Amino acid sequence: MNQRPDPTTTGEHEAALIGSIVVRPSVLAEVEVDQFDFLCPELGHAFAVLRDHYDAGFLTTDYAQTAYVLEFSDVDESVWKPAQLAKLIHESSGGIWAKYHAQKIKLAAQVRKQQVLLERWSAELLSGALQPIEVLERFTAEAQSLGLTGRKSEVRGFAEIARDVLADLEARRNDRSSVGAVSGIRRLDETTGGWLQGELVILAARPGVGKTALAMQTALHNARKGRRVLVCSLEMRDRELIQRILCGEAGVDSRRLRAGTWTDGDFDQLRQAEQALAETPISVYDASSATIERIAAMARVENSRGKLGMLVVDYLQLLDPTNKRDQRVEQIAHQSRRLKSLAKELEVPVLCLSQLNRESEKQKREPQLSDLRDSGSIEQDADMVIAIHKTGDEDGQLHVLKHRAGSTGYVKVKWDGKATRYSDPTELDTTAFDQGRTDRKWVSGWDS
Image 1 (cartoon, one colour):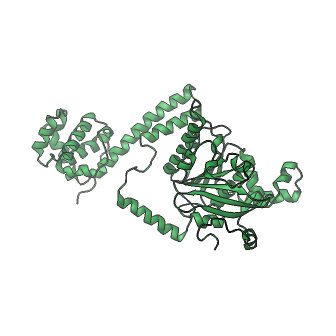
Image 2: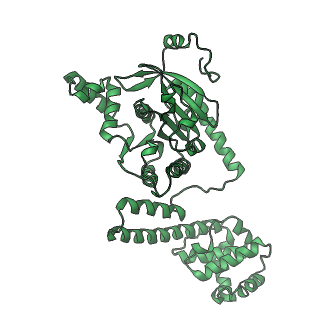
Image 3: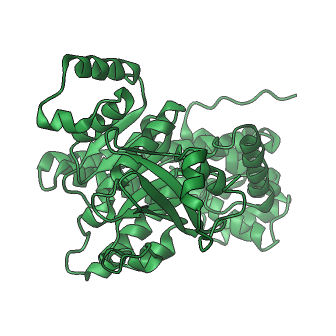
């Protein structure tokens, strides 16, 4: 058996691939390169001609006919002259290493593209014409458009996709939350099955109801399961968010910290919580002002450092518009579409917080999808919409207003103002809540 050749230059790989195609035209159905991946333009032109004739069914193993095809397609004579064509055939090793040569050609082409991209954007960065974050955003976008970000092909066959579906199902049978994220609220997670990779989940509420608190306890819950979580905060500083987590973990009333009346015992508990959570994989991007493109750029950077398990954006209406001349409805529509695209691109669930308008508050009713503030496109782009509705100082409901893969309904929750967190109610709480209430819509299996 022939040993795999070990050419030392890109030109040798390119010559060997052309020779392989001449010897065995079916090679063209096995390789994933195009003429622009070739460093030698003459060989790149020859590849394009051979591929076109193969696709048309006119390419054979007759070397003389192949030389004729190349000659009358204006390919340089340095490729099709008998002596040169014989050399290409000799270097092909019978065409058995065609895929290997093609991979080397593709890799070399990507390196060249990366070098050009890095040199150009390095010069742009040094010129000072753009802010560093703008350079990062544009560099990432261009790298993505050139296929340099390592993303999978967007077109896949049935068999490959079906294998992924079955693998996901098998993983979820062993660990129901293995292919996504979970809220940590048992009844909600049992109903939704968790938030899967590529899903956009909207968590909506009026101000002061606790949507950030629920988002942060969800982030902590997932981080504790080993998932890397990135929180992009446009409303609160990173210190405020982490303080909330520490208070919830330590059982310290956050209001005492704000008033400056905490005790030595409180501080000791906070320090213990900090030590216990020191290795928790949560990162916070403290962005007082950011566009959706900037959020996407930061998420890609974090994902490149280690696969993200969840992305939290707090919150949608605070994102700076990409185009300030657009109407507000169009701005929000653009942002929600980009968030959904980002979820699919990174294969990560995105939990985005959103404001509800005043209508439900004014009319003293439960929230509806139409209450989503500024744009109906949020409803269209989201895979799931969950609204928080407080029914008392300690009682609340999580209304699943939209569930693309399941039913809608609501879940009862308890609110702990001191720890700023939501939790499942006890059975006693649930029984008391349900007395005399037969008008509620429950999803099958929730009240098990």
